Image 1 (cartoon, rainbow, N blue to C red):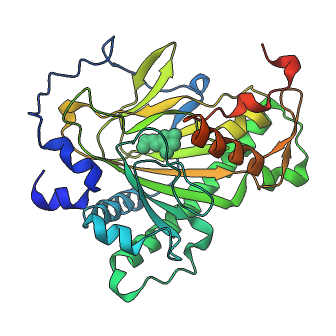
Image 2 (cartoon, rainbow, N blue to C red; image 1 turned 30 degrees about the vertical axis):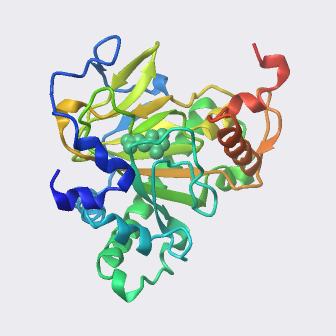
Image 3 (cartoon, rainbow, N blue to C red; image 1 turned 120 degrees about the horizontal axis):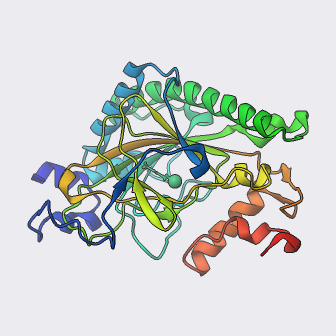
Length: 328
Ligand SMILES: O=C(O)CCC(=O)C(=O)O
Ligand SMILES: [Fe+2]
């Protein structure tokens, strides 16, 4: 990394590349060698090919994101801080966000920085003069991307509900997957110079109904846990990865499972990784209840997650809400 690139990273990340001598053959930390694979719905994740998002839009969004990430750390922090009213919030170290967009401190630092974008607030956003024009053009592309990706999410949700013949109250359909909750996180992971270095994102399941990930023209790093092994999903340009989230697992009475995944860059890539992830949630106050789960709302779930992260250091998630009779 040159000096300018270094200045674009949070200070906590800058030491990473200085001491080590990059050695592409040193990916030896996994007990077994990495395996590559493509996801199938059984994993709680699958690849979408005919998604309908114009290739030019995907490329533009990624390009804009890269430009914004390449700005000095202090600029990103000042123009997208959690204390100003920007719906585009800059964060690093942890993607666990409170509803206000502030980060919750976890016990480990994830080697990731990002912008969290609340889609519903984007259209009224007026960046300050000194932030223009970069943020303004980012905003415009995000609005367009958000329209596409939220339509895809709803279409998938409807198809999944139909597929399982779930008897959901039709009047609640739009509250189980609530457009007003949609947000996009654009991430940048610094290049990995040491196989024993930290993770880009520690292992987790998404709390969402579904998440849609674009790792369009970037390096690999996304891994899913299958039978105690981490499998790497290589990026394929112009495809999207769909993740089932915890809320879909609960709504479907466990017939769809949320997938455990993480991000870990390989030394041999030597490049940073940029990904774009869309998350959609139920309305805060809609009650999810069925034979597997005690009644709970998403806001209830979220506060448990935040509390567990703060007190235990990790997310417990759905097991907190399982009905005792089905808890083996
Ligand atoms: O960057 C990625 O590809 C995955 C991000 C992710 O898993 C998440 O934000 O929940
Ligand atoms: Fe995730």
